[in-house]
Image (cartoon, rainbow, N blue to C red):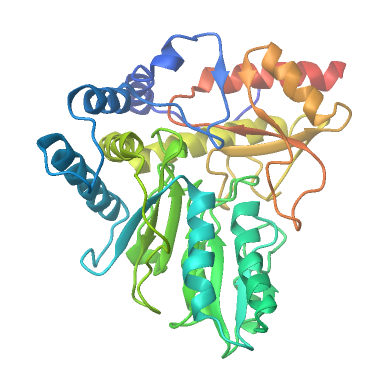
Length: 404
């Protein structure tokens, strides 16, 4: 393998901490020759989460909010406690005012906000600012809401969130787009292709005190610390399956400080009780593991990968070009590194990597219409990934650089 001066450091205490956590993921332990590098699509589950779900299903499985017998009462209490758990995890400063609503994931959550809250707050001549190069789930619902209003004779103007050369939000250009009719801004916490923290803390200052801000935190929750008090946003939506919980669960946190209280429309059916139990257990696990340490680990792995990739002429790393070297003074990627080979198509490269035991995503990554037009390979890591996996991946990519 080519030897690189990565500039990334992994102290012994951090390696020991990571090894202890890695051993808690049964699927990882059972597949020692496989490097799972697709955590931005879905994370693996620690034993504590699996035990919580199995314990619930084998000792007290029942419906929530619909019975008076002990199992039903206990399930209702578990769902209510999970809502409080979400509030605490997000650093909610006003838990008595806010609401937590469990959904199947980020996509459903954002669409519910658009359908059941946003359309009720927009009037003829109002404006919204939404991203055009983020995940489609945080671009399409707002345009659908504006289209619905247009069919009802209400004209709402859609303005596109500005980006800078590093693919971060351009907070300097944003104030020029905010007018007295701006009612809503949709933003993303961590970009699902470029891996950058989108510096959402700057959006409130640029938007002013009255505009409602909705945060897609699908790639943020469980990956790096998130405080709703610090960000001063009105909605946070995330998926449980990207944060160590089971698929089919997620949450909307609504601050209920600007505009009317958020209440999902329609009749509330049976909740995904086992998924909600898994989410509460996952948040407990993440808090005990230390989200700040998880961020430190995954950022270092991403820096090691980009540092190696940018030295290989056949590869193009997407996103900020000033943060490719491990010692870069500007912010680095939060566990997501996306790239292309100049000669090997990304889909083919994905198959090659899978054949060698590296499970990555290779496609368009569900990016909205303002995003990349050509497929790419995305490597996304979590706390169970190792330095050795990144080095083995770089060794293979180096061979493809010279042989491809």
